[in-house]
Figure (cartoon, helix red, strand yellow):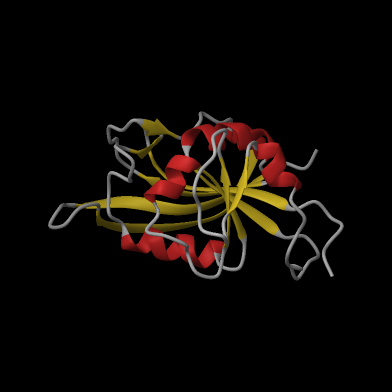
Length: 178
């Protein structure tokens, strides 16, 4: 049985102070703790992404449903759903029943899809990396006053092999009820 409630729409991203999320088709850092956090949060959920984000993945991520938004035809594995708009992706029927009756759909990138989804987001799961890194893909500017911080876990680790430790936080924001 599927839920009649609208899904929660969560954006999940790792970003720097200057909102960089990517460079040259990948992430400009290697942060294993963030990859584990991403896996933990998205496991068992539907993930919506743009075609460049799909291309950056090593393949299908186990235990998650993949939806790719693209205006052009793409050759994708049979398990991946291709839609032409974010609205189509969000209108797909639920395939799982969440404990509280509403599933969470995760938007995982890239920059254009985040910008389109932000007005609909109920939650943001951000890995806030406390440094500036140059990149060619950015998270959209967002108004923190629209959200309430729910939790924050502080960490520190190198962003590259043998590099200095850089502080970062896993932060969950929830949109104010309207």
